Length: 119
Image 1 (cartoon, rainbow, N blue to C red):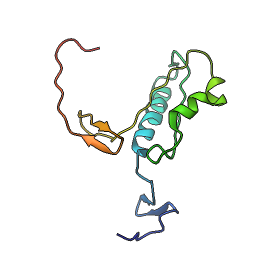
Image 2 (spheres, rainbow, N blue to C red):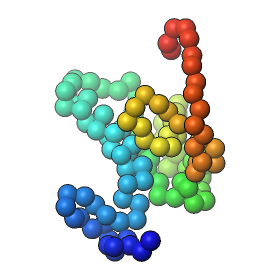
Image 3 (tube, helix red, strand yellow):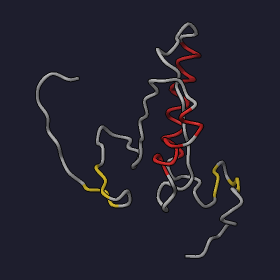
């Protein structure tokens, strides 16, 4: 279908933003940022046990250099020793379900049941 708005302009219309890539994973990025902001707002004395770095990339699904290139970059090697990384991709979920992915673009819909104490 043809675009009804300019796809590369980020058009604001009726309280929404329209354009190419305006939804893809933005909700998850905002959740991380809002969680940290809420901690600072609600618990001003809160300090993480280590520095937190957020990385946002535009090309995770189209052959970008990705995390491997970042780990070899001066930006990463210049960080303090002991920096850990978590790469979070996939679909956002409004429920307690978490989707399993193969090749990033193909979700596998599976049910997993676990018993025992939580970790």
